[in-house]
Length: 231
Image 1 (spheres, one colour):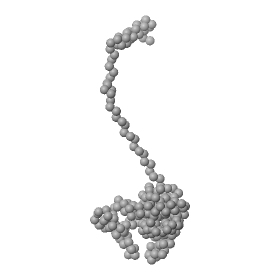
Image 2 (tube, helix red, strand yellow; image 1 turned 180 degrees about the horizontal axis):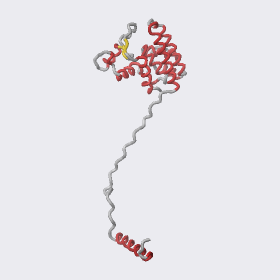
Image 3 (cartoon, one colour; image 1 turned 135 degrees about the vertical axis):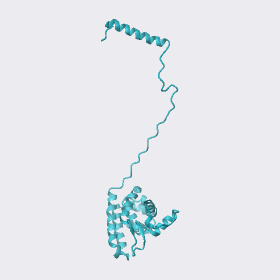
Image 4 (cartoon, one colour; image 1 turned 135 degrees about the horizontal axis):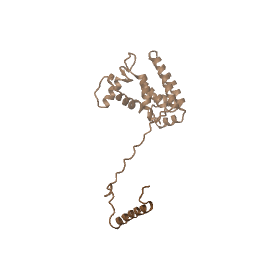
């Protein structure tokens, strides 16, 4: 599955959700990188932090908030590559429940807004490209029914077209998880033998005499053979 595609999906979402906005016709109000002030206040409260202006949100908070509030709630780790991003982007735009209902209607299961094993099985049993195309068609239809379509329709249309393109690309070339190479085990340090590392002790006694005699015999033979001359 596509647990490793969250980072890529988040980068794509932030292309559409970047910057600050506070449009008078946007019910979300003050919004930074797609995070409304109300959502940020709730996140800070649950994290045991004091409230602050959403414009001060940092990337670590953005990452954690999107992962917790959207990706995990649509079970992005359990969805196939491409489908996960398409559902994730819709969840960010319209809420996780709306995105899950949209997915359930596409795959033909009860649209209760709760993504469970029945929905996941139906997703796996259907062509992934067909899911992405139908999902984005239905998403655009949903947007056209909103009263704010005249104001935001053009931007939403461009966003849906971009999501469709990227999601289909993710199906054709899924994100490959990084190869993790396990570290080599540390060498075992065995205790040295009592005499390890010491120079050898010269032989003594009969063995020493025998070796010395062999050397003397060789020198005598050499002199007799070559007359003591160097060769």
